[in-house]
Length: 290
Image (cartoon, rainbow, N blue to C red; front, side):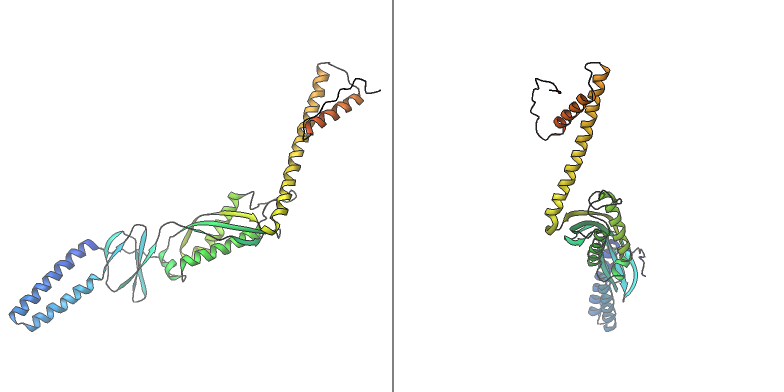
């Protein structure tokens, strides 16, 4: 496995001045040798000028948050991270690799969750290159590699966890545990991309829904679950209010109720408190026994 080796190279501004001066100097020597009729002097000055021209190819620019990977006839010799105008061996091949933070959003993938229900899922992955040598030499195209492996990890995540938890099941679910699911997704993508010299900064689900063919059925199921939960809460509160009312009547000795009257009062209060609509009172002019 090829690891990144940071390499410092010469300042391009200094070499720019040196090469310009050398080029002008050898041009003057060619003129002087030609004027003097010295063939050897002309040939020597021309060859020296050609060498200087070749050296001009060693100048290259490194932008901020960018690196240049240097190769000599196919052999990796190092990576330059120093921004600005630089100069290195003119025979070095210089490949630019961006070290900026980038993000990738997957398409909507259709998978079956852990319960076998078809769902649609998508994610946003924030990543950057931390090892330029691995990114350039260990995989064919590291950008495409990031996209394919991120989608593969997202598919695996979707099949590992259920869309939502059931009452009789514990554990994580895609919809109810977003923080834990995001962490699990980031770790799995990072494991897949480690060999490509890429670090995953963040990975989060950007879209999550049931597939269209079961969306209506699941919506009705969710609505039913919500109604049942609300009813349980209403009944629990109503029973507490009835108990409080009976205790208040007993403590303040307002009225003495036998068991039958208590049952009637409890029934009426529960109907009033648990009804979906406003209660319509009916006045009883008789008694409970007539």
